[in-house]
Image 1 (cartoon, rainbow, N blue to C red):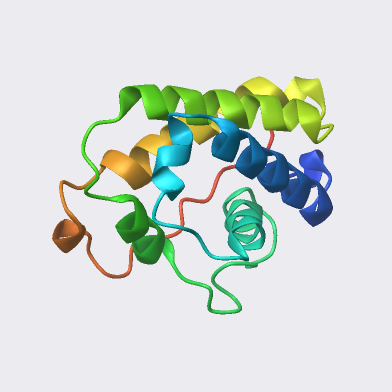
Image 2 (spheres, helix red, strand yellow):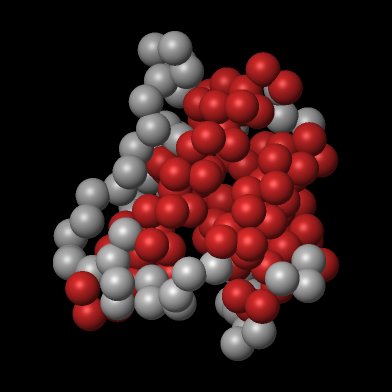
Length: 144
């Protein structure tokens, strides 16, 4: 069964999506607040590696030891409610799909996935201390 990773066009496309998303959120006065503390120079590449893996590609995030799902959730947990920031981050993702040339037939599915993933990493646990070790990577099923 083809994966979303395959349908998107692979790692190069995921890197483009991550690059455009990161540019858009940094330019947004609400979403950029999440990066006020700074961010890693390789944030875009790490984000793309995470997306590659959860969308059915190779273990580009966990394989080289960049982190695991518990690590990702801990990075995003405990920041309170931020509905407007979430909405804008999702909109930036939708726009990044267009910027990166992702086939339009995949946009709705990917945006729905991103919305859910955003909720899971940001709002599943009330605090960092509540995030358990060993959370499984939230792998997305095939395109069909």
